[in-house]
Image 1 (cartoon, rainbow, N blue to C red):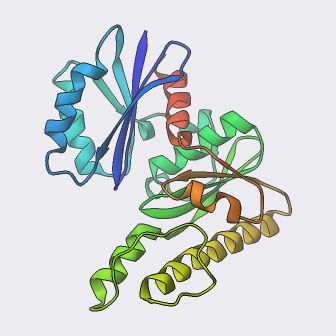
Image 2: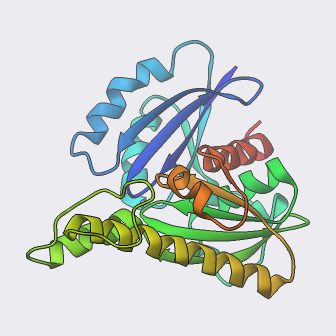
Length: 252
């Protein structure tokens, strides 16, 4: 039996097929802002539904309007569609937060995926539309986190708000300062975010008086891996791994 899980984010949507050993065997990524999103998902459905596939699909979603569209697509195919917050997640991880409604499903899944794999204190840094830091402590406690502006979103906002600054992409390890506008922007964003990341990690560790395993995921995780003062591990599928853990607990 194969199973389907998915992660619906502001930038992209990832749908994965997992096998009976709960390993990812196929991943399809869609652009969340694509005007032909529904059409593209429908085109890929036959590819996803080949062979013996369970009729239950589990999503993590932070975009309600897209989740509703995808829900309709799959229910028309006789699927039972679930979102992770439907379940009593405290059976998996102790969520020490004030309001569950204010904690993104993706961040919960990051925490569950990290603790399930490493069984230790972790800080999960996700380079998404926002840059998020989620604190997980033994024994399976989600203790809160930090939300900072996302790198690409900050670059796009700067470009749209200024007349002369160009749109650019961060490159590897720039000089400490630039000799032209693009180099100066690259230096500012790269070293600025490096400082932001290291400072937040230090403050979390100091507050708790203990060490943390640093896990990076999302678009810029590989770029910043070797510029973080603490040793960091890149886990591109940590969100999906958390969703799989929830699937196994509640839908098998």
